[in-house]
Length: 259
Image 1 (cartoon, rainbow, N blue to C red):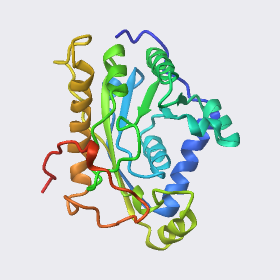
Image 2 (cartoon, helix red, strand yellow):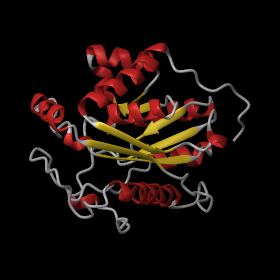
Image 3 (cartoon, one colour):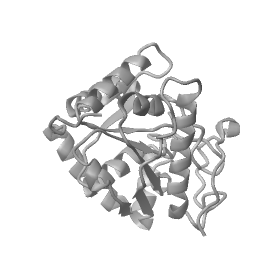
Image 4 (cartoon, rainbow, N blue to C red):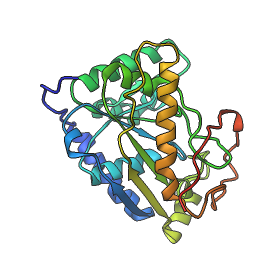
């Protein structure tokens, strides 16, 4: 993919939001960010594929991206864009609306492809929802992120994070004040790691099953990147959220946790 373009310049509102995210996360938790985006990939098309475990994830990932000097455009659910104040802020920041379950979801992929072609990094949750795997490992993914990567030829960086589920409950805003109060006292450790680029070289675009094959590779990479962040929680998380349902129907084969 040609890189003869200027890198995307994030709007001021998004740059300020990234800074505020660092402050918010630093107040409620101890943030540890490891790994980085390879220098050769900076300033060009890029897809960050993150696991999704909590409503607090976007703030954590924004803080981590601020620490690594990257300001991605986020593919986010259409519900956020319909909210009076948040929706305006999301649109002003250049984020991309995803209306899941409607014909408009294809428009989101077109918008994301155009953004990547213009040099913008994109942040996407390949699972398509807050994961409901019993062990809180990445679920079997939706194919949108893979189809975007195959269409654009952009590298995919797995962005694994762990600990945000200890700050906000699954049902937030219900229970949010209790979660925030607990986090202020306990200040849980939240870890984020930028992994190695996902190898999609052997996946041929346009062949039957290519999107599913690429999706599985992305989820495998996310799982492998996540394992070292939770070495003492290989099967079940220590922190159990009673508001979070469990759905094993989308369980994805995971690699053994790091020792």
